[in-house]
Image (cartoon, rainbow, N blue to C red; front, side):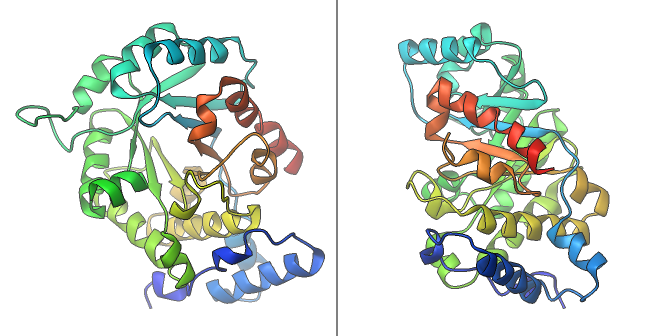
Length: 306
């Protein structure tokens, strides 16, 4: 039986605001065990539920189509003056127009990502940006597969996978986004959707080195709704299990799986405590230097949880 068929879906979004209790926590793990159809041995349960990644905490800031020269100068100044924990990989993704400005003025503690790239070497592709051009101005990362590229621009899973493969072949790291629409979650198809998107990456990637997976439920992006820590952990654990079964246990352990979807300074600490949440991809809150610093520093909650 295919791995994807073993997962029947997740709790509906209507339970987002439910407060955890001893009984609901017990119910959560019971339901997860049921969905995953695991053996009853403790060892087997730990392999899925408690298998945390071994990679360094990772926080990315996706500035999207926001900012002016003036506002970005202020944001960079705030980031430069912030005290950031040293054991975190921090990346920001400005709009293409401002990458050079940010690269020239931002602290070396924060690396630069692009928000998109073309599928192959540059040339007669009006309006596109090649990976080679990104490297030329100092980009170390690129965000690919974001829901706005999938559902607004119309990029397919396969197209995104090929873009990721080409970026990696040129030495640029990939923040590979996956996530379900609201109607897909309500229909119990969250795992099916995420695994299909994962397979498109797996079918194309030459290696999983320098890949970070960002789980971003589309219904939580920019809406103010956020998956509960338990809901996010449930998907992250399932994605890590998918990697273990379909790629390798080594890749599953070392690949960082970060969460995105209305992450802010108030909810990041509780999310960070979950074992399979290896960091965050932040949207609106990344445009506020002090709040983004709080999210970066939520790695301290991770240490407490460990």
